[in-house]
Length: 115
Ligand code: 5GP
Ligand code: ZN
Image 1 (tube, rainbow, N blue to C red):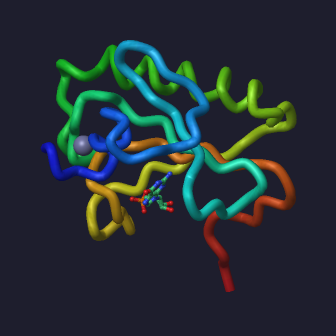
Image 2 (image 1 turned 180 degrees about the vertical axis):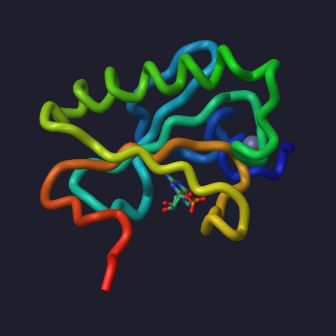
């Protein structure tokens, strides 16, 4: 998946503002934030989306979910935050490398507007 945008960010071929990195994950600020704090947590392993994850990825996904609140706090989100995983075209996904958006600060509106 050498032409994948987030794989290029993982490899350092495209610069990003890094929030966190370890052997299997990278977190970096979104280039077009929707709130005062908006960063993405991605596995270094390329998976197109959550729909492509299998049982063999259960531990990795678990570690991502546990890392999200730790990084959110480190970014100053002591009062809570939103996590978003867009999956597939039907879910509004634009970059097809699995990522968790971590969003917070300011006024976070209800996720779905009801009339
Ligand atoms: P998706 O819609 O796939 O869930 O989210 C993709 C996100 O990637 C968008 O929020 C978009 O702003 C962000 N993005 C797209 N290109 C880049 C880039 O080159 N660098 C960074 N840091 N974020 C990007
Ligand atoms: Zn990728």
